[in-house]
Image 1: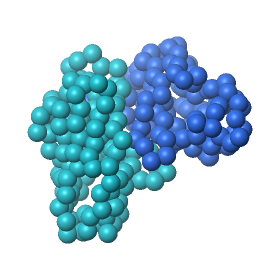
Image 2: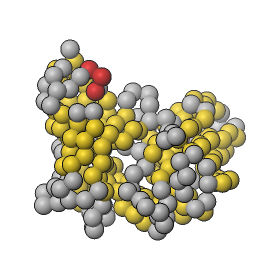
Image 3: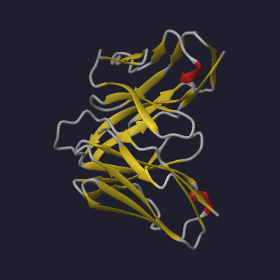
Image 4: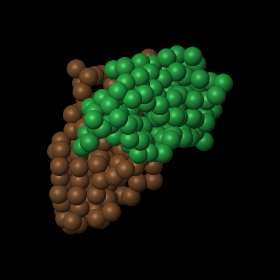
Length: 116
Length: 114
């Protein structure tokens, strides 16, 4: 199983809503990532969890709150978002830094978020 | 810091034409190099990779060789198909204390016409 599964695929929310994006992998990877991708741009790193601990936060606004309940799951909680937060949110996973690691990331299909 | 420069698009080719998308990088140490492809409305898929100098990555008719002397990882395909139409991202991976940090190029959109 070499898949990273993201739900939902599409999400529309108002600026006062609270919603969550979910990501799951069963490849035994110990690092998981959230990226944000705007149209016609490369993905931008938001957060990295390494061995279930938050290891990188790229100065992301607090209206985005990540959570890693266990080594297979990664959530991104959304609250009081702005229209400019509309984007494709990509989850990825990789081998942990203490494991045999080729540097490769495995990406999910993404969750397309629209903030009204 | 690390950086990746790839040729601007969009690139429009006729089916069966030869494809080259240039990619050069700046990095400390010896990063792994990747080409990812993104089809319309989808996430990123790894197309090919190379983990050390002179390695050649290949997949689905695409090839790229890790050239340390020219710090390049150009993507080539001898005969493109309409189904190859997508955005192609060159990337390098740096291992940090927190995980693999991918640095992407800006992406090159490829359109293949009949």
